[in-house]
Image (tube, rainbow, N blue to C red; front, side, top):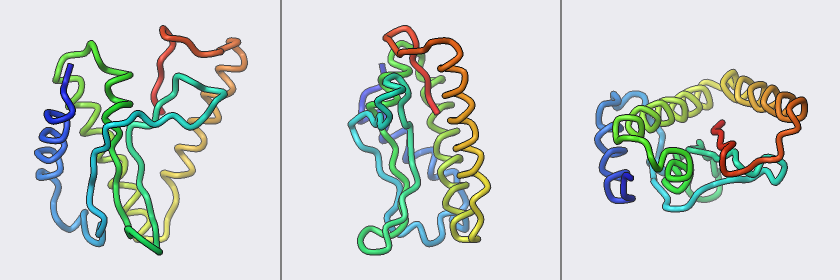
Length: 137
């Protein structure tokens, strides 16, 4: 399993590959938190890997990565899987940032559509969650 320290180093290295222009106005930076993030009691095994946060009254614009969510989903996976998933998550959240700066919410709409599709699937399948049914959104 990738440790929290390794995860932070990996994230820093990956963020270093991103041209500065895409990080413009990301004044809260990109942070990695140790906890897992799960917000929907109806989908107890769906974890949030990262999120783009806009806080006009405090931190400004930032990307938060949840190491604990990665650990829940990828604990037994090789480091290459962690890195690929982390890279995909970082790019996804940077797209949220860029779209926010442009006043566009296409990715937000796509995220909501995918979650709605998963909810429909879960209802059709009688999904109630469980250790063997872990998903990420």
